[in-house]
Image (cartoon, rainbow, N blue to C red; front, side):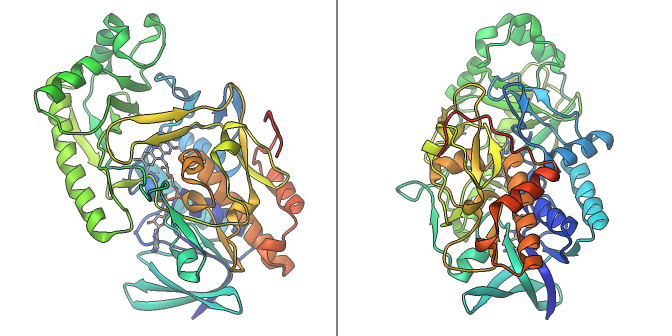
Length: 453
Ligand SMILES: Cc1cc2nc3c(=O)[nH]c(=O)nc-3n(C[C@H](O)[C@H](O)[C@H](O)COP(=O)(O)OP(=O)(O)OC[C@H]3O[C@@H](n4cnc5c(N)ncnc54)[C@H](O)[C@@H]3O)c2cc1C
């Protein structure tokens, strides 16, 4: 049995930001992760680019998230924030998952976070209404960790569910967004593709002017409808996707492809998850053949990498002291206990087939996420960060994006450390004290919203 001020379960971007923030706020911290590296969906599932640090021209995400981007730039692992050529969001932030993995280890060492890797959270023990300890399966058998505060950053709400926090999953019918296995193609000549789209601007979803479509400006490609529809019509690809979709990486001759789609998957059902991995990998091979034979500039493409694990957009969400709704997002609500801001639209990939729906905030607006979404009902000394905070299915389709989960992680870690030091329950922590610390640490909590809840 080992004891820490703060235990963070799950080393994705939310968990990493939580661990760094808690340690920088003075807590002794253990970060436990089931894989042998950190970064979660961003590395294990190779999901990128990150979207988006901006609302219009204004940067609305700072803190540890922005620090990570700046450090990646120095390491050659990111070009920083780029204009989104597909016009979906103001900026996208490509990154190299391998360099991100290395950077996260560096940041843990610098901030004094202890790591326990290859440790699979099994269950939590609850005593007197609080999470007292957590049990992990490790390469050396079971290990139990005691902590004064525990942060569930597993994205699947494993700790919260085990502790008895009520959870929900999916839409009104329990259906979640589809899962996608990401892959990167290298040896790509984007000049050839740029020439092709300059001749056929109607084949791109974006409204970019033709002269802007240089190879460098092709940071995101969404469309190529003719090529895609023809391949589907002749039976070359059986992927329920409505368009071709890929993004720039830090490297001129490489792209990351977000096109596989496995529908009707419950990511917490082991048989479903197994089916999803197998089906998605078959889709990767179909798509690889399609790119090489049909898409200008891809004739010599190679599969540079496929993700270790299929990307899960949605699973379990906790019930917290506040549940963020679509209305809050679309009306750009602000909150007195706000700990994060986002301007990302509600972006729902059809859980059962082709198509994606997008609902946008007013131009230039952003909404806020209250601290209460991180505080589960019914159980004390537990906070939740990242994908599994308290939202509706629709609101999650906006809050799940990486810059946001990093900011939520920083908020949870800071709150855990402050509440442990003060000897108050996270539920009773003064939100003004938390917000003051977050603002001091670079989190951008300035108000730009159009309505106030
Ligand atoms: C296909 C797809 C496309 C997306 N596209 C974009 C995009 O273009 N831009 C963008 O910004 N965002 C995108 N997202 C969303 C974003 O990537 C994720 O929502 C976000 O990274 C989730 O971060 P997290 O830290 O909450 O969870 P994760 O990154 O999933 O981290 C959870 C961590 O917990 C660990 N863990 C889980 N269970 C256990 C356990 N029992 N024991 C120990 N460890 C455990 C995991 O291994 C993982 O490291 C996309 C997501 C998907 C799946």
